[in-house]
Image 1: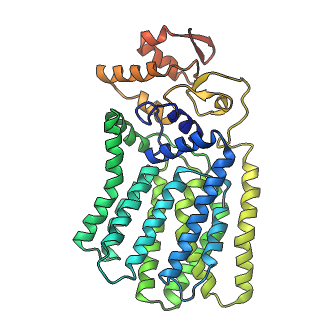
Image 2: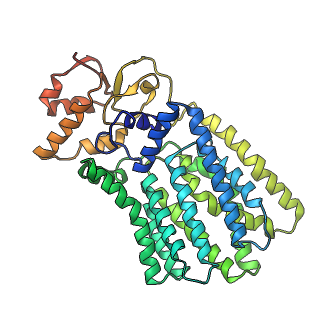
Image 3: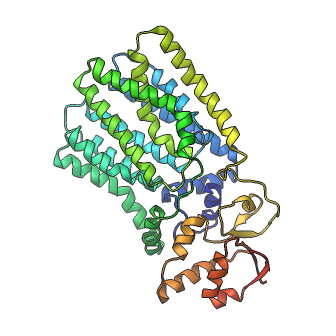
Length: 420
């Protein structure tokens, strides 16, 4: 879907205004650049994803060392974080969640700096807001971290009113620039109409919570034990206590984010990785029995990635998450009014409805004459050669617009062809 989005935007169309999808505007722009540079190259998505992961690992480890999160300077967090990224194959590839989390981890690093520095750092508080705002631009679900920023800034970092306002200004600056972009391109009204619907559409449950728990119970157990040991059984500085509080609240907000995600897939778990890395590192640094440390270390670093590879391989055959083979080959621009993306493997998208479930919610809304005219113009602007309509949504849409209905003929069950 992300490749199709970048491909369509590269043809001169705009997200929300011409294409119905739930990705953030900044992610859409990034996928457009990816399409211009690499086309439909899965390898490019893998490489860029791993570059972002490498940056996150190196940055987070350097933050933990710089602000003395532990009593010793160690590269153990980097090793643990790399292992956690191998929990699932899609955590390693480029995704909106990975793009957004890169900026969230930068914001978390600035919050960590507030636990050490004893002066009024205007630059740091501004950067916290800017990074969090950019993250929301990439992944709209990350708007949930706005209250995280406010709460932790006041309760843990002791923000003054001036610092709080500065961070809020920084947060809304990227969003304001996105708003200006849509206003400049006469698409602000469509963006305001569609963006809230992204939180109301039906969820794609590609993977179950049970699948995640089966693989994740081991690292979660290490994190819980690590938190318990660090909090109860050993002493820590005031700065380390503040950092631990930041991490705990981070994990709580990260878990809350899964109540609003609309694509339930493992790549969304990327937001949990920095917090789990911190707590699991506490486990390894405080456990004194060498044999226990060695066994758990190898189980995490070698066992978790190996178990992840084996487990998800078993799930390929019966999962809707993977694009299957398409029996019919289409060479022209097509539109699929359904969840199955297989017809796009050899064809390009030729209509506005990329995210089917969001599009269905959008089409089911009541419209006045002006909004119907705008929808008709959207459709007329990009008429696909073939429409695959397994659920009858396009057929219902044609009945609302006789002028559009006259341009298509039904060639077989659930398939409409443009009359040339």
